[in-house]
Image (cartoon, rainbow, N blue to C red; front, side, top):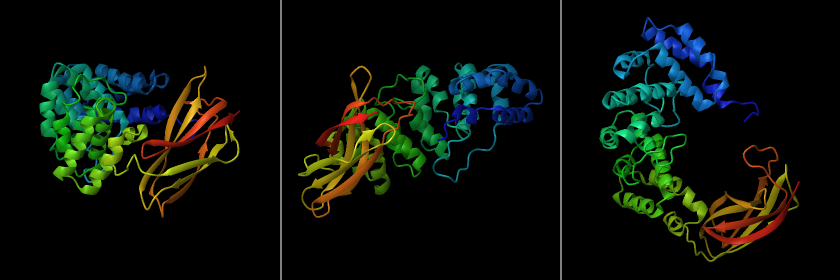
Length: 370
């Protein structure tokens, strides 16, 4: 990604504001598009991404005043056609419509039925998982009952909303007071969906749950395998995507479900190649010796030094393969970025470990040079 790239400027800017203003001007003759654009742009560029969403919603409230029963007809008339129903994935929609969800929350919490009607329409233009969570908190039974019907909706965007909006750890989303088991009947229906956009959301939802109750998820996945309501290949993909967090932590039962024996008889050696220096790379070779064609899932873990003497371990994928005549040779060049803004490298003693089928099998210390 280019160093000067700004996601917030790409998603919320003068051009997008002009587009939104044009939609409302067509829907409502009294809408002052120029005044709306001037008000939005007076502050927009000073705000962060989520703040821009809220600010545009606030400006819409001033431009089209009233509660949800008053503004909903205008809002719905302003919407463009729904997203292409013939696609099956990677069609998130235009981020500028996220502000409409904030607007619905601001003026619609006392009107849950109408709000859910509007959200059902909005999510077919941009995903509304953030907007619906305040309604889940205030009216959990009511919203979950509505979601029962949405599980069979003709639009895969609405079906996905059911899974995505009820996630325990939704990025950027307001926390919800649902029990982990409350959405499971909905996920049980959605897991057999024929659209990857939906099944990926189901898998992400289950991955969230594994952080608190892995056995609940593992039992559910095995139930789904027995029920055979999903294409076998798709369910394998969902299972692997669901268990990615447990795989990193080496959870034995998760490994077995994925077909990897944690106790596989294999000897592992690791050898470093040259020095490791910030701004360059850590290069190493790994040799596995076992029996036959055993399947192996090989990860590597780097224990980084942190300021103050602490360490931080990061797990990385290395290889998913099978032994060939009892052997497997791997090599890796791990870049050691010196200009990363999210994780600052610190010179000193580090440790590299090799994990096979969830178990640490080899390790070696190395000096990271500045």
